[in-house]
Length: 300
Image 1 (cartoon, rainbow, N blue to C red):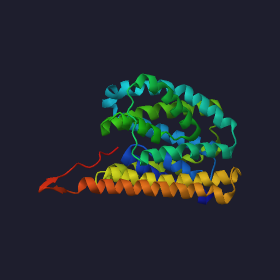
Image 2: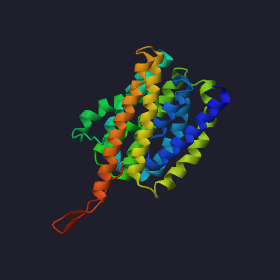
Image 3: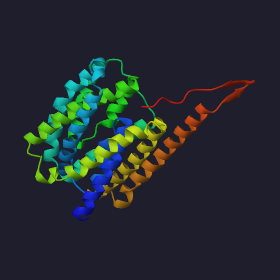
Image 4: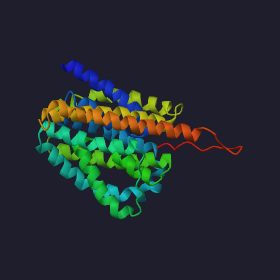
């Protein structure tokens, strides 16, 4: 694929991913990375994404600044864990091969997406005890992949946070991880001319896509939109995982792409369950002449 085509694909992907991020509060990297890694490498893509995300996350934090004090107690343990995780992850990314970096990215992201798609929640009672190692894991994952939205969304959703508090908690956490990762990349000499050359293709999509997402979510069902985006993301990641497994010759190509097939089957089952559940909760239930209705699933 030539340079112009690669740049165009990355620019379009950035626009779509930023629209999703504007609507949901997360999702930019988890959509941009799987697609962009098909045409570039983590060592080139990650620094460019982190530069863009520092600006986006700080802007989101500025918008939610009035709620920072309220949500900080739930974020604090994760924040302290992020810093050592970022240091270790940055060192690993600088030392492993391009294809193994892709394998780590796809292999980590896929189960996280499917757990979210299944609607599984694991309420965490001891935030201080769990938050620190969880934060370290998030920092490790983010510095290697620039992805942290799915695990953070899973964590904060499990706390039953209100929608606005959820977005502010994400903004605080992601501001810390993106800033610390940018510093780590700079210290390791990973911010190169090749990486910064991608920023002009990523940034316009963010500037246009975020306000579109903010406006779009007011007119559509947030939970349905989130769930459809997760399906799209799962199929992309499944394809990327199959491709890199075949390239590393961990499995014969015909068997490697069965990972994609399995992903599509599992996600289709989860998607069918989701829509059936939504329909059942919205439909009146007649029992002995009494009509019972239920509220829809709250958005995350």
